[in-house]
Length: 410
Image (cartoon, rainbow, N blue to C red):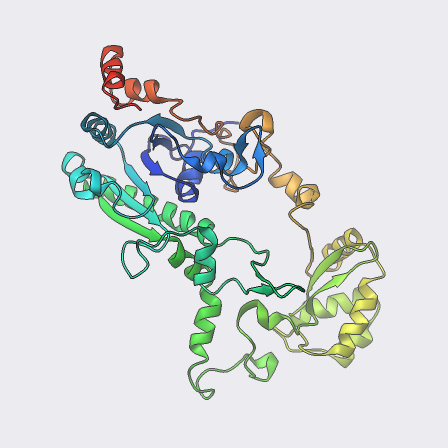
């Protein structure tokens, strides 16, 4: 059953270039009307990164799906006036570029609040509106290196290279920013007063990785105040997943079909279930572990035993085993094969290329008992200019033609 999208009735006017445009992707998927304002040359994200699918980047096809595109030359008085008309009944204005771009065109928060007091204005940028890096040109990986997330690798030839990693800043900032937008809209609709918000992708990367940085900060205090946990005899572990490297009962193991599974029996009850299930209760009797959070850290003798045990079955068989005996065992997939995983097939699947131009993942947010429509294909440059001017601004054909003649529409 198709249900009313939860954000239907929310209108967002977005000025964006490249990755920061993803601040509204999830909102568009949930029903918000997102009008992307572009210069005549368009957002060059359509040519950026790889792969290029039938002449258009996958990046654009994904982050700008579900949106409308209108071309406006905001350097002209006429173009700026059209922008103001679009903002009059909007809920949100997004400035997804270096801070101050709209302000320099007389379209900053104070100017727009004068015509729409409840407008929520949010700027998403690389390093934020303040600080010594505020105007520094940058790309997405910079926010991860800044936040301490990326460890440089050195090749056999001695070159320093960027390691494979999940980009955090460019993904976390849109999530935090989208949350801020929704909070602002709720507050503005309740009070009639808008908000000016901003978020930096660098800040978001650091916030997403809070556990490691806060752990290092905590370890600056004396050991009499900050220790490890009881299962490690209170010895301090390395922060975050670095502290998992020496784990044994919580570790990755190879299987008989040359796949891998993640074994997570760090709780004593799960560990006992496992040992009973593989008919090796002797392992539990010898190394019972603590009640909680005991990874048998550094126990290489046990690790050798478990390595042999896990090599005795396929990955699929181990998943069935974990469910049967109630011990946590998870698949170790790759980006190349996750689409074959039965959990992926059941819950996510692909929105087909016939709809979006490329096979893409749907929003992970689900409506229980119903579904919301798939997003529409990412727009071509200015695809919705005339329709938006008619339907949103209320312009007739003569006025649209006059604006085009004046160069306001590119």
